[in-house]
Image: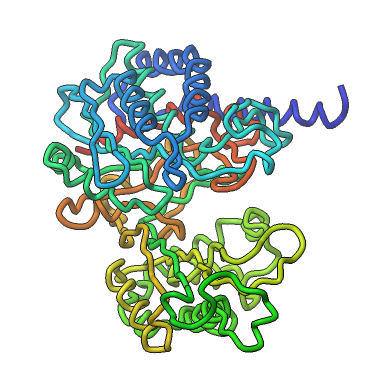
Length: 508
């Protein structure tokens, strides 16, 4: 055996030992006996291969809202997964867009709890992957252990499959979950959830969620150090396209024109570039849309404290490596970069589309170009107010002809630190020996505001042990058997969800 192989073997054994500890330790307040816990742990281990297979089959069945790919099939499959896991009732909920799924499991408990799933995934180009993105192969990844590589592996099918595995394990030992469950799933999260509110507000669904003491989205929340960061919210998001066309502008060519004519013909492409430049400061880092910051709530003293704790308890080099960067903007120090990450709204260009983009040149002056934009919002900004401000800004600066086509979006979400959803997470992680810290808000987004805002106003969060990388990127993976000390593999993640449900029940 080579020295490298021996090291990989040692790491795998260390990670396996760490996972065993995470499995063996329980939450002090959970109402489950030692014998029951042992039986559940064995059931999880016995069902490991089935869980892996279930995740592989789900990855092989992608639903991609942006491409309108397999959306009805994805909803039907989500319904099947729910029924297989023991939900007594599950149905597909139609919307004006792609459907959602609603399921309930009445276990005769006094407490109802909500679970949010997404069954859609991001687009992918197989040529960019080292392993076929829909085959979901389990591979050895040096320094990590055994991982499953595939689109949706960590975002979010892996963590969601682990949650379902917890329900399968409980049923295998003849034990009902300690809480009743309401599951709501959507197929449009990756296009900013334009119709999810219709799922939640459906007259069949809303009364069920109103009974819940809170709701979570399963996630893989551990860093390589084993640290878990618990976010007390998430930024809001708006996805849109800005389209500059000669037809709407009244200037430029009616169709793509030979570029020699640029000497006397206006360019919709340069018109769009000018509009984009007006949206931000010259360095591109701060929104310059009129009134953009007038509703932004500054960080509270407690949030500032949490930023400081985050800077002290996490590793800057690891953060930079994960982001693939060498410097933060303005060469900020680590704490300042975190403060900016959690507190600042953004205007981001996802992509620019227009004209000729093939090999070589084509020397044309395009008649139509567009920019794909996402906006990240912080408290107390709202989706509708920001869209109105963007349109007003464009009109004021001479770009009123540019179409603003909004495809989806939602407001920021916040959940109180002392809420049952958050405190139960802290208790479970402490009992499992996983270091945890609170964080003001996730810089990414999920439609938690549908739950935390009116009419529901219930706590909502993200929870889950485990690890993965590559969400939205090539070679996305989810950790199955951990070679990383203190980081949970799939079985320990599954037990973490069992513990969380018991902790919620104990606190109700």
